[in-house]
Length: 305
Image 1 (spheres, rainbow, N blue to C red):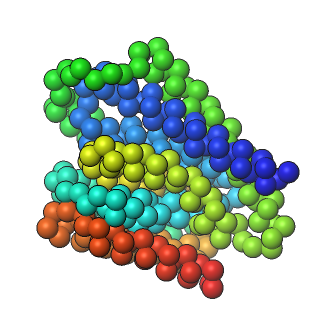
Image 2: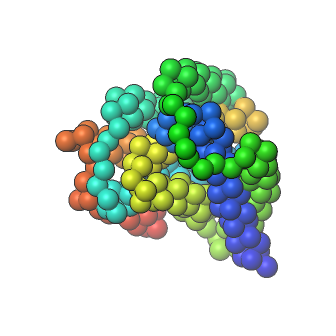
């Protein structure tokens, strides 16, 4: 029964995020916001709603290992698998704004998180600093969106009331699903005799990152690589700045030595992704395949650790 309820939790997370993204994207089109801004903010936050729900619920329940490992594992998956799969499906040009601004910021934020982890905890003060960084980033993105509003186009969108209903209903499903996933994953971890850290880095991290993967693949298939790459990078920034920031403000988080290593590997993966994206200002199929192989190697490392 625990496995069935875990699956139900994942379904609620994924479908809830799907409705949230559709409603948010429709609202963004009504407001005439460029797609790269949509990807970095609204869609990124929507697809990261499962991670937010899981980690915040874990922090409330005192499951610190899951709160941290879910975010770190999801970010590694986003950078290597989500972007890698999109590049394998169709090589794409790198958006110049993401390359100059958001990808270097992603590396810096990941490195700062590593430094915060070194003392073995993520305190409330550090959580507040992360949240302040999220506020500054959002303010900058909102300002950029207002400066670059696109002229009205004949694009079919949901009506404003339906968009708001999708947003509210999607978030409700994500919150309830996240609670189910944390509760049942902890029970299953204990029954298997494996650590919550391992479960968070693998099953939960991949499960909560499925919305990013699906959304980015769909965007790539439609030729909107700006939204696909922006979704992955924006989600990673949101995961660290907001989710870990909020989780540690709710309850200071104990950091395992293993989590420090995982965070260091996250920073290295962010650097590799940036170098690939910067070379010839595009992501090739070969580079995408290398990213996927790196993630498979990381998973193998977790199994033998």
